[in-house]
Length: 136
Image (cartoon, rainbow, N blue to C red; front, side, top):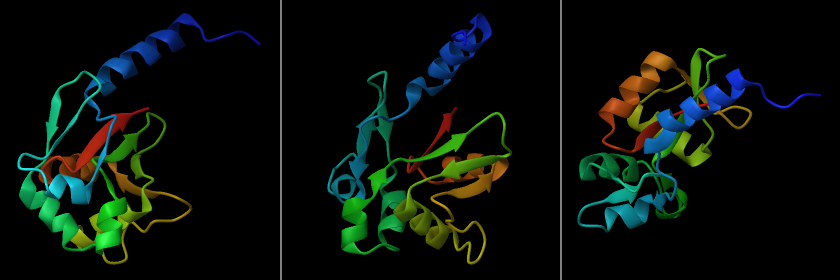
């Protein structure tokens, strides 16, 4: 079996560039709520700020233990072979569903919650740093 070809290496390099702004060291919701200017660092060392009001909305639908366990930002993963963005964090999915009042839509099943690409982009835009998109 041969190793990855030049096309595969190029795609991998480009995905690395697209994902360079992702947060790699996430913080708990509780910790972020206690910071005067809540933020995390990205792979490139830049600040990824959070809107305190967005953090408060997520905290309002979680217990203290859940807020301690939830690591932000939540990552919605987009793959080229799917029409969905996937969230694999169960507490994050619960919080997002409650904040958005999704009711029966977009349930967390088999270790994942899937939402359409267009909705994922809208969610990232509206939730003040709480969500990020990763491309895989």
